[in-house]
Image 1 (cartoon, helix red, strand yellow):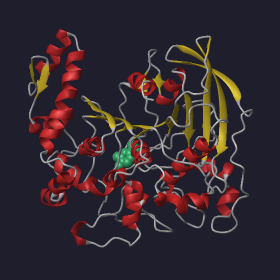
Image 2 (image 1 turned 135 degrees about the vertical axis):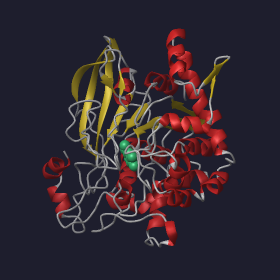
Image 3 (image 1 turned 90 degrees about the horizontal axis):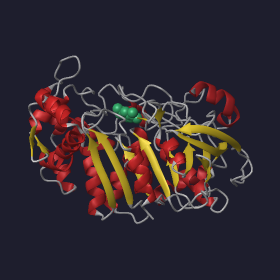
Image 4 (image 1 turned 90 degrees about the vertical axis):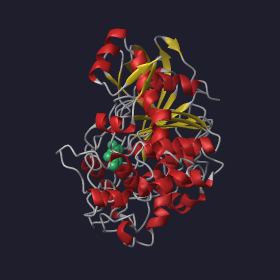
Length: 476
Ligand code: DHB
């Protein structure tokens, strides 16, 4: 757990925060420091080398979080595997913008979950799916069984606080840590197994947003001062590709996006949120959409994502199962192998919205995101100017550091060019426009984007992990 991690790993460095820094380390990957493990993943017998708890910065603030694990396949079903030039799945396990540690993991895909997440969220950072045997399989494990190298970084998160009450894992700590971990990997080109020019960043929810941010902000100088302070390796932090599941991104626009989509949906209590406030929060959203080239958001979502998701789902069913589904869901018209329906009927079909109003920047500062933008001994702060309130002077720059859309607006050249983006159509942890805008922003820049929604799936869904592994293999 978080508490144990602090006690075991970092009392000395924490005590030193703001005073003497830990002794610099070489940040050289020790090829020989592995143990050999065996496991069964998705029905395959996998033997692999496991490097554990490598601190990836010279001056850690909290080594219990700023460390990574490396897993490299040696044999798969008895056949020797050479992973020297294999893609590297860089799989974070961040959920809820909480701290995530891999320090005590005993094998691949074993990051400690920190439990509760942001405003009513459910931890889902492992990209879990059901494997052939019905067991939970993560992208990390499936990548290993596909012959890839797997790097699992820990990262600081919003709730970390010193005994003196100072928050040291709030924005931009988590992205700075992930960048430092990428730099460590790239600085060890030729020592660490795998192709350091084919790093694929994977994550879910907050971890999906950070994965997208990592991809969008490669080598941005905006993070330099933070990386220097940590003693990050002197190497590129650009990644090759991104897999982002239900990213909780674009936080400063998430409240307007949320009300614009879910504003008229009741809470699970059956209550409507204040419709006047909801409309006021949503007011700027159409203009914001236009800034991404989307003039009709309803039709964009219906035609690009929602109807195709229903179509794929219904096409995958047997004729009788499809008939049963359509009989229960008469709002769907099924014709010539295509599902169509109206926006209003889809909203009714989804039902209860998960979050209260406003969803991200709460009036009472109670959300995980308010905590994410805390600083010093202040646990939580506002980060939107709703109602004309002023926000602290450092907030706009921190919002940029946390938002992939900021970098897509600028079109930075070191960004990832290959993107796998997924979200469930029932996921109201944020607005479905977050994913749609991310994909639109990337396509506008000419990137290779696979973006789709999983019909009727909720928060954290990952229903085509095997396809991701194939997709990675085909990208060079
Ligand atoms: C997560 C979920 C949320 O609803 C949120 O606001 C932030 C993060 C998550 O599951 O990581």
